[in-house]
Each structure stands twice: as structure tokens, then as C-alpha cells.
Image 1 (cartoon, rainbow, N blue to C red):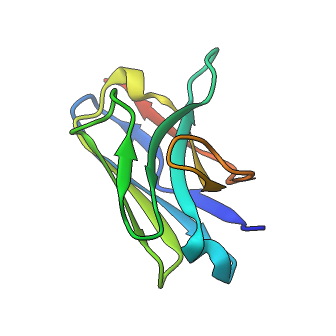
Image 2: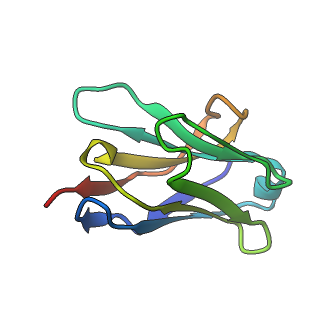
Length: 118
């Protein structure tokens, strides 16, 4: 099992940027697919982006070209750089580990709120 702690959320204006971080515990993290998911009020949790142990990234269509996922296995940390943010990006963002490129595993962080509003 991997423990995950997200940070970096906050309030940002439309068009702005935020960088989320997810710090993991456990040496096996570097062997896991890691990902970011989000859940807006009244909606189901959805995939945002995933990254394989080797660094190959996949994105939801809604964030392609605006968000970048990356990882540093030595630091056991996954990042999500979010640019050109839109109000519809407002959600709680969750870090995940142990899943596949297109689906989550069983390890979740506690979530970090991202609010895009003027």
C-alpha cells in the first residue's frame, strides 16, 4: 500500500496556472502507474492524467494541451502543472497510484481543492 499526500491547490483566476504535487510513501511507488483524478460538486470522479513508471503520460481530452503530468521517482513525487485554467476545472483533485493508464488503483490521497474563479 502507498500513502499519498497532495498539495498545491488554491484559488486562481481563469487563465491562470497552478502546480499540484503528490508525495508518496513506500519504495514500490516507482513501479506504479500514478495519476490525477478530479471530482466536481455533483459529478463523478474523472480521470485527468496518468503517468507510467517510465514517464509516458496520458490525458483526458478536456485537459490536453493545458495540463502536464510528470513524476520524479527518486523523490517519490508526482506533479500536475495546470495552465490556462478554466472555471470548469474547479474540483477536488486526487492523487492515485497502482492503477492503469486509464483507470485508478486502490491508493488515494485526501484531495486538494482547486477553484478557478474571477
